[in-house]
Amino acid sequence: MNDIGIRRLIQVMLVLAVLFGVAGMRLAWLQFGIGRAQATEATVSKQAVSQRTDGLTVDSGRGQFLDRHGDLLTGIPVKSLAAFPDYGMPRGSQQAMERVAVTLGTSSDSLDRWLRELKEPQVWSRSGSPLAMGLTDGQIRDVVESGLLGISVLPYRNRYSEVLSSLHAIGYVSQDPGRLVREYPRKLAEHRLPSSAGIGGAGLEKSLDRLLQGVGPTVVNQVTDARRLPLQGLGLRTVAPDNPHFPVRVQTTLDMEIQRETAEAMLAAGARQGAAVVLNAENADILAMISLPRLDPYNIRSAGTDERNHAITAYPPGSVFKTVTLAAALEAGDANLGERFRCDGEYDRYGLKCWREGGHGVLTLEQAFAQSCNVIFASLADQMDPAWTQITAERLGLGRQVGWFADSFVDGQPLRLLGEEEPGVVFKDKKTAQDGGVRTGTGIGQRDVRVTPLQAANMVVTLLHGGKVKAPRLVTEIRYSDGGLMAKLPTQASPSKYGEIRPQTAAAVLQSMRTVVTDGTAHQALASSVWPLAGKSGTAELAGKQKTRNDHWFVGYGPAENHPRYAVAILIENQPAGLRNRAAAVFGDVMKRLRLLEEPNHQAPRAAVSEGIR
Image (tube, rainbow, N blue to C red; front, top):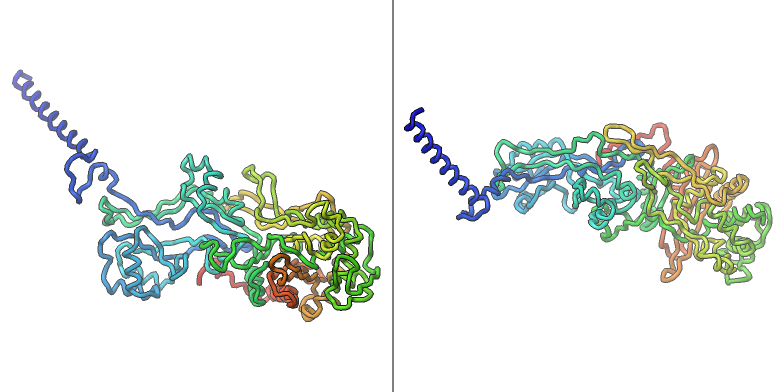
């Protein structure tokens, strides 16, 4: 190449260098937003993220609960209408808007207002409901054919359903950033858990939270440009975790048919506060656990609700505790079922009276239990070493937590399935147990005695097993999403440090519980039962400001012959003093319903449980 050619090449290269330099300066000028900017223009920094997304979480990725038949209790799938903000763009014709409004059962004005006020993606719900509304095939067709901008039909999981919302045993999820930081600092620091994640607030949601958190949500995104306008042709994009193991699936022991029937029996009796527990008499598995007032998992502490699980809250048991006093007297050798006692209506100390005016006269110990004689049982407790009462109660699973527990679970940490279970109490302390008035009050289930409905039902299972205490179980296994087994939770014992009561004692108490129904206080309420039943009633007088109120109890089992299958505890709280105990009648109703569920031609309507909303 000659000199002229070389000079021209250099000139061209210089020109190009200048042009590139100017372009670079202009780019930097715009990048930092220094230059003149119009309201409709974006800087390069904004243009770098011009394709934005509006995300709708359609599945939190949290683990799911199933009943013992495999039907979903949480994460109920529905096909729902999802709407994304329109950012000022027209949705579509008025005719299309009216068609969608009609199919949703609302007015076009209400639908239009909801859409215009959207600041972020949302799913359509019925008025006053926090749940995404499940659409029928016809509704889906109307929505799709309307062609409204930013509206789609998406699969969505409601954490809880309208049908199964009041499950205190399952609990609820809430926002608690403080607990999230305390319990998951590493996950938060490594961005494996968003700071907005929910955390279990009670029940299994809380005790199993560390296993339920999962690996991330499923999010449906609408892609928009820098002006927040939907990009034509890109539509919606779904982003989901690609880990096949999560979310986990927790199989519980709950039977939703039994749960439903037990709840209906309580409500039919007009119970507004209380609890009911149904245990499998064979292994103490929890088949049903009712707590009233109901739980609203979406609105904790709202009017008319109570997030506390009354089934694992300790209350004065009243005469139900005479079961312990009877067992203690038999264990101590202080009495036998055939021994005779006299009740003249009043105990000669502490101002204690029998519930029956004038007393019961002469009764055997078995008859005294069946008639729930306060005088005779107060006398037994007064004359007995209080240590026997305390020890026998603990041998029967009272005064301590009895729910399923593992020192080291699959993740190496301890696990108590019912973390809120109260242990209850027999005597406040050893000193007060030496007071005769305290001993007599304790013997009839008053003073400081506190028992949970779960413990009361489990006490019956203990008696049916000759004195061997089992730990009520609420979960049988946890599996990964792909079906692989994470952990099995086997049945387990819950032995007392004091050992067990004798099988002969257990048999004598069971015999006496049968007499309660055949010839005692529960005869009128349960005489017409289809199954032979057995149990013990109790009326607990409340102290303090509630002196004119009582709690009604009944604990028992059935059928009382030929292999008992169910142990049940009923508690109806806060009843007017003087009102006849209604818990025995509810117990009878529950047993009747259980009997009907066992009919060969009974068909379980469990589809409603899986679908969640009908």
